[in-house]
Image (cartoon, rainbow over all chains, first blue to last red; front, side, top):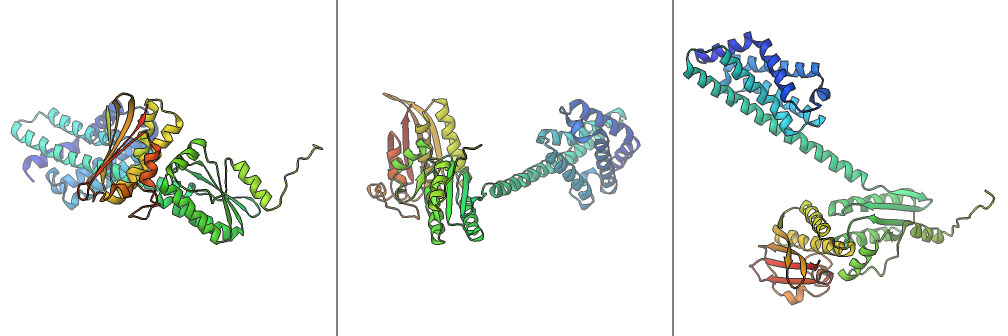
Length: 288
Length: 129
C-alpha cells in the first residue's frame, strides 16, 4: 500500500463519526419516501456502522485497490446481506444501490475537506475508492436480482400449490376448480392431485370446472382429455363445467371434439347432474 | 405501431396471449374475437416453440380495404414440406392433436402461410377490426 493510501484510511478512521452522520443524512435527504419507516433509524445506523467498520478493516489490511482479495469478502457478504434484507422489504433496485453510492460521495467529500496538498495523489485515491465502491454497488445489484429471483421462484411454487385444490363437495363427488393458464407442468400437477384424491376419498364423480381458464387451445384441450381419460380408468366419471360461450365457439371452430364428454355450462348444472347420478335429491324445506 | 415478442420458452406464450388481449382491447374487439385471436396466437406461438425452438411474433394493425389486427409468426426452423397436408385435420408430425393449423385457420378472418423445408415458417393471421 502506498503512503497516500494508508493516509486516506487514517483520515477515514479518524472522521468515522462525521462519515456516518453525513452518510445517514444523505440517505435521509435523497432517500425515498417511507425508507426510514421501513428499516427504522436504529437499524439503518447499525447497518451503516457495520458496513463502514468492515470496509475500514478490509481497506486497512489490503487497501481500497484490492477489493477482489479475500480480505474484502466480509464487506461483500455484508453488502449482499443488507441488500437481500432490503429487497425483501420491498425496496427498488435504485433505492438499494443508492445506499452504496451515497457512501462514495461522502468519502470523497471528506477527502476534499482535508485539503490535500498533492492533487495527483488525491485524484488517484479518489479513483481507487470510486472503483472499490462501484464494485460494492455491483455486488448489491446482483444480490438484489438474486433475492428477487428467489422470491419469484417461491411465488411460482406457491401458485402451483395454490392453483390445484380438489374439493370434496359431497360424499363421492369431487370438484376441481381450474384457474389460470394450463401449461404442461400445471396439468401434470392437476392430473396427479385429482387421481390421488379419487383414491383417498373413494370418489366416483369428478367435476372439472374451467370457468377460470382464460382460453382452451388444442394443448389445453388435450390435457383436459388426458386427465379425464386417466380418471375414467380409475373408475371415476368426469364432467366439465364452466364453459363460457366464447370458449365453446372457439372450441368448435378449432375442431376439438368434445362430443364424447359430458359437459355443463355451469358448476351448479354439473353438481345437479352429479346428484342425479348418485340418486340424491335436494329437497326444499317449506316449513322454514 | 408494432409490438414484437420473442418466443423461446413456454413463459413467452403467456406474454403473447397477454399482448393479444392488450391489442384487442385497444381496438375494442368483441370478447369472442379476442378469445379466438388469443387461441390462434397461442396455437401458432406454441408451434414455433415445438417445431422451431425459437422465433418472433409481430403485432400490428394494418389498413386495407378494411382495418385488420394482424399477427405474424416467424421462425427459422425446419419449415413445412407439404403445406396442403399440414392444413388437414388430424395430420401431425409431433405429438399434438393435429388440428392446430387447420383449426387456427378457421378461427381467424385471414390466414396465410409461407414455408419451405430449411427456409423457416411464416404465418400471418388477421382479424377484422
